Length: 360
Image (cartoon, rainbow, N blue to C red; front, top):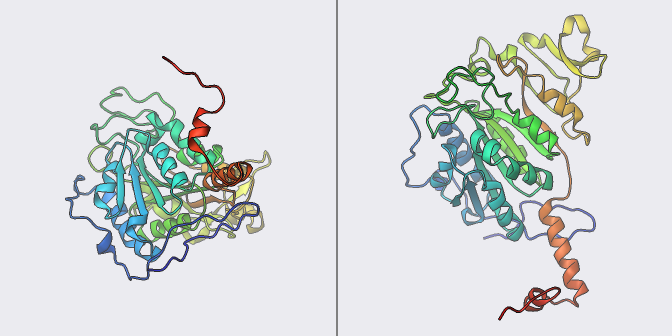
């Protein structure tokens, strides 16, 4: 076994962390599969995501005992059962909180959160945004099928206005969350979107997320073929996908459509808009900068998509910037406290110190 590190933060003024140990043994996707029967509905998009993750993890060369998947409640949250790693099937919406404790206390672990649009954006909304703003070293996979699947087809926080479901028989009145916009508004340092059926793009996005130190959030459009079948068909069908999907590539002008005929430019009011490239001119096209410190352009990109028709939907990495992770800052703070105490830490004295009372 090699003790090589998977990352090296190299942040000035912060102590180096003991990060995830690697293994010299060659691994395969089969080693990350458990003997548990996969219990999702036949045809569910979760199968494709599971297969992609199991196939991707061997290239990291990490010991399976140093990888942890934490989930909440929902169809996607069965994920840990099917990963031959450590796993926690936790509490509804609280996966980011539990994963935060693991990540901060155990820097030798690669900690992943698997959640759904209902689990993470409804009861778990506060836990998600605070994990993002703190920049805890987590990889968050947010499966978005725009419906509640486990509880049998109620509208979710990402369902479009007017959605007819068992709980909204006359149509949903709620304006939906845009998970990418939400994450960027919370100052997340890595935000991306991909699609369950696009194996190549999904794997590339996972790779970019793993190479990021801090919180990485990936929204994955995932089909629920029982309660919301075809929700993302415009992005998947060969006849329409090129015309509605904007593939973001860092350093490249943002254009899409057949033969790149459409593109994104900055309007006179400062907003972004989609235009015909031949009419607007190539020199006006916005060049995608995923590493820009200011998230405003990335946020503007996230607002281009039409939630009803999915026209002009960007996928790829919206933002990927360096910032000290919460884990590193916490370790540095503890180190300073120990140094101030003369290099030792007396837990009993700390607990009994300050304002304490004895109750008879």
